[in-house]
Image (tube, rainbow, N blue to C red; front, side, top):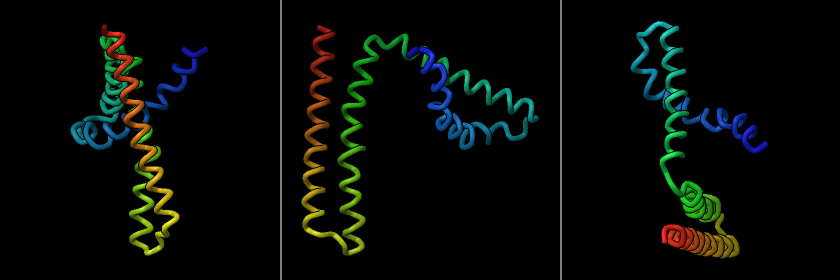
Length: 132
């Protein structure tokens, strides 16, 4: 069941990166090609990205730990710390920053940094234990 879910959602996950690469980089180089060749190049780009991820998953020995360390570092940062910083910046510029909001955001930033450090440390310990 899990493999079927990945099979059905993988094209959706790759849609945005493929469109960014196609629109901003590849299409400008194949603009003079015929529509049939542009379609071929688009399909080739999708196949290359697919095979790049397959080769990456085969060659990296501890991919699960690599994914967990990236998630442990990025999730607290992007999900907790950055929104608090952005709220402080936005409301400070508008003159609507209250001390209660500032205190809440400082607590969120401290919690986000603590979570980031702790989760990264735990993931590094797991990598160390697996390598040892």
